[in-house]
Image (tube, rainbow, N blue to C red; front, side):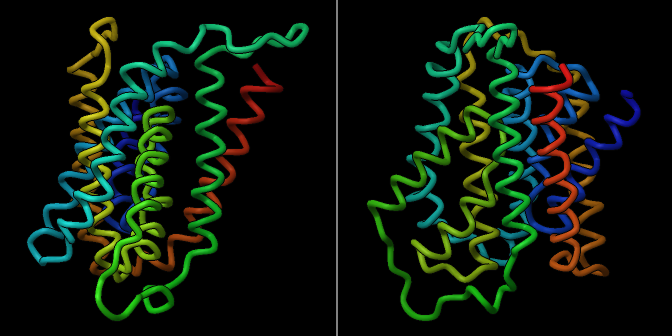
Length: 265
């Protein structure tokens, strides 16, 4: 299973490099089901892996001038605050047993996996329904809907803190609609936001969290290797054509997690 896990870790990066996002949605399932990492700890590990791989993936976008720094700061600040506060205060405050219904006991870890599966399904539907760049590009002077940007940034931050996913499927549409960014700039800018909020959110982990740094470094290394592979493949393969197929794969995984954590424990 570990060998499959390492291959899946490469796939996380390949997906990020090939279709510009989506890889982070695989990180928690890979850690939990292939490496047997406890779910709450897996969401913390995911923040580090997602943040580091997104940071590496954003370097080339900086080079070609696609990152809108002003937008990244405006959207990123509430997202960073949201994810840091969630990891530092909300997650530790959750009870070990969230609810008990007869013989069914919903633990903290199971609840976070179920919440993650809902996020997976939302992300999958976004990818399956995905529009082309030309469908969503907004022309004209950039304008900011500050109240909604601050609100959505905070919501994305809290969600990221709870489930450990980057939230690109929420960030990119928000940047297009609320900040009037062209799609290519929105994708590039979202990677910077994801990198910053994920890595800073990881810093919100309390001292009681036992981090296996060698393991985390190895998985991150495989994911980063995958980014370079995915970037190379993107020159030969149209990532937009693969996105709906990957969306269906994520949808099936999300439904599978719900079934496993509720009916097949």
